[in-house]
Length: 301
Ligand code: UTP
Image 1: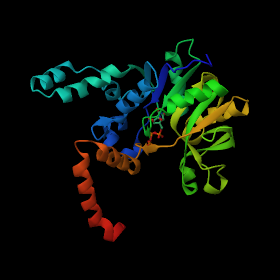
Image 2: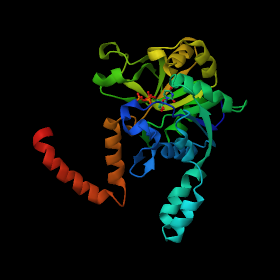
Image 3: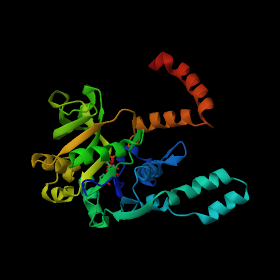
Image 4: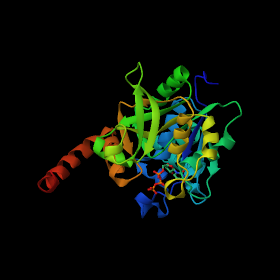
């Protein structure tokens, strides 16, 4: 129902090829690369559970079984760790299986984010009129953004996306929103969306980041769009189709941390930030980074 107060299913598209992380992703799915010690897929599961969801529909490709395996229980490993007195580690190992109910959705070929989201229709209950999509590549904090997006849907109906402001020179890497203001500063009405425009053609510097609260009508829109760039079905195109048909779409402008784990240029700063804040590693890492900075200052500073 449009006025439901929580989201039940979070869809996590994780069937991409991760080419920007080759050669690591020949054998290790990028969703399992650790930020300090925890993979992105587990961080997203925590965020989904925190938003009140009970089901995590993980879209994986046939050769990425390890992503689902991360949510298994590992009783032998836990037993060994406990026997050795490593209770803290045992608790960490057990955590993933306790967060949320994971459900696998297999995408046989990487036919795009839109195609991946469309496949998740089969796992939704008939009564679910909306659901969330969270991209494990995008780390955001505070993670309460989804609760805010649910509130905006209650008020305006339709679909709600998360936006971040970027330097206008960098918009061409993103899906960019054409917006109108609303009574709330941090909420904008979306009148159109353009995928990766040239900087001079961009309607704003507000870009999509990987959190979507989507009305169920997105599935119908996904069936009606044509493949775009690279033969892929773009989620952006389906959202843009809904907007053109009068479906309300709003964005919440994110005010906080955002890292893109999908490529080394974003993954490294995320590791530094999470490492610095880690009680065990932070203090030493801070000193190491200071030393490294001094070494490279003549070249890069
Ligand atoms: P990306 O394009 O950022 O991921 O897709 P990718 O394709 O893995 O990355 P590169 O360009 O090859 O390095 C955004 C999200 O959509 C998922 C990805 O797993 C990622 O979470 N995705 C993308 C799918 O699930 N299926 C697809 O066909 C494409």
